[in-house]
Length: 144
Image 1 (spheres, rainbow, N blue to C red):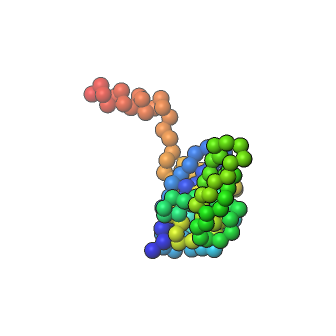
Image 2 (cartoon, one colour):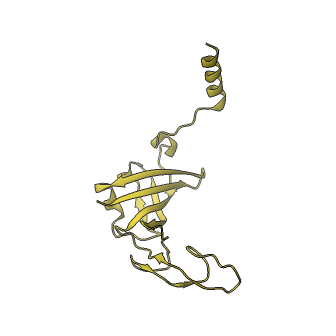
Image 3 (tube, rainbow, N blue to C red):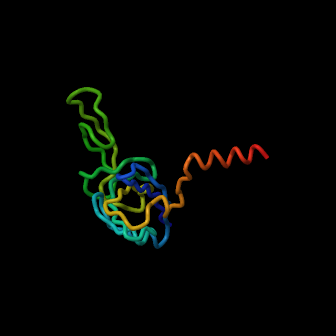
């Protein structure tokens, strides 16, 4: 059974949210590539539009947008995803995965491109309590 760990990033707030999906929920990602836009409805995010920005496979190899296909390859890269040049002009042969999603991918990075009517904090159940209120509650409990 295919299982994906989604990391949903909201660029407006700078926060990220984690969600694990399996079964029918994964059908939204079949045949998709990096850069494709998807609807958030199947993920429980009504009104949201999302864009696939990256991911990694079960062994931790990152996906590169400029490599076509699903499989792993070992291209000669200068810099970018999966490589960091130590000197100017240095090229390295690094193992990376292509830009198409497959059953071997375990983690998918997604960013929000269009906001829905409810906030992501509310949808994921992570609404924050103001600090002043929470501190006052702690003092009351400690005093009794």
